[in-house]
Amino acid sequence: MVNFIQTIFLQAGRVQLFVLGLALLCLPMASPLQADTLSPIHHTLHIELDPDTHAITGLDTIHLPSS
Image (cartoon, rainbow, N blue to C red; front, side, top):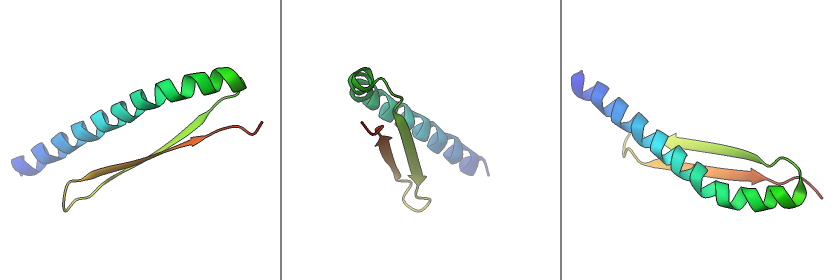
């Protein structure tokens, strides 16, 4: 039971770091675009954790406003 709880917390920590890393990667891309359009840019972040392989996958979608 202790190993299971430790695994869950370790995986949760990895997901948080993964999300933070993706957010930091998106900041340089979003700022110039947002300054040019003066409209909000919406991000959709989808993250999955494979319970068998413990692989973390993420998909970041940027929705640009129509000009």
